[in-house]
Amino acid sequence: MSDMITIAFYLFAGLSIISGIFMIFTKNILYAAFALMFCFLSLAGIYVLLGADFVAITQLLVYVGGVLVLLIFGVMLTVRVEGKSLQTGSHLKWGGALIGILWIGILVQLILQVDWTAVMTDQPIEASVNSIGKLLLSKYVIVFELAGLLLLIGLVGAAYIAGAKIRTK
Amino acid sequence: MIPFAHILILSAVLFAIGLALVVVRKNAIIVLMGIELMLNAGNLNLVAFNQKNPELLEGHLFALVVMMIAAIEAAVALAIILKVYKLFQSVNLDEINEMKG
Image 1 (tube, chains in turn brown, cyan):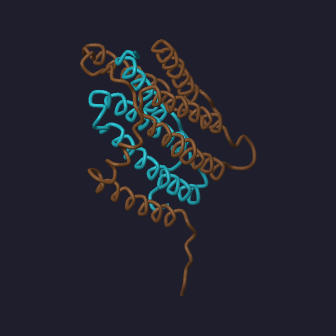
Image 2 (cartoon, one colour; image 1 turned 180 degrees about the vertical axis):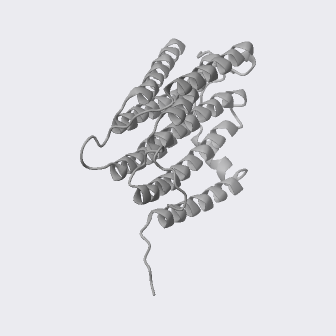
Image 3 (tube, rainbow over the protein chains, first blue to last red; image 1 turned 30 degrees about the horizontal axis):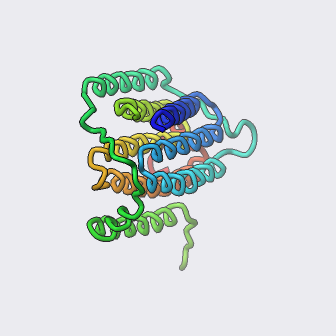
């Protein structure tokens, strides 16, 4: 069982990294969007393996179902119809590669210096939805209400910015 | 068990990929995708560190709040990109170089 979890983790990790690297190198914006979808799906799988079932479901609902569809809508609305519409280029290639590799190097070196055995607990994974619901309506109720308010403000702001202005005289 | 350092390394690699996308790509929407990828890498760290105190669920709740902020950010950023496209007829970040367009 534990071996299966570890194998599945490496499978999902490899899938997410491969689709991320594909996103960097592909020229087509829609291919990048679908690679991002695979990345989000494999991250949802990793959340399940880490015992975060509600976070995984929310990842599927919000990212794969919401944000990605929004991004594809954005792609469809902002490309020119004629010609090589969905292609896009890159600039600062060497700068990007340098920054990415430096960042990975620094972080991996820092991570490998620390002994992480104190963090891992071998407690059995249990469902978290019940506890999250109770916590959201008791201890974190202000965060919950502020989240709703922020969503409303974001919705109104996005509709105001993108919508057509109606001039009334 | 999954080695904890490997989760953190996966998160670091995903963050670096998002950073490279933000730096390298020209299209504003792909830059937005890179930002989403970086937020997801941070979420993975939060969920992983939740295993220190699994009964408090602080990491899960923080990850949920981050997801909500990311959803709002994507909506507002796409609205801004649509407005920019209306003004400049392009979402290429190199061509958007005028103020009060």
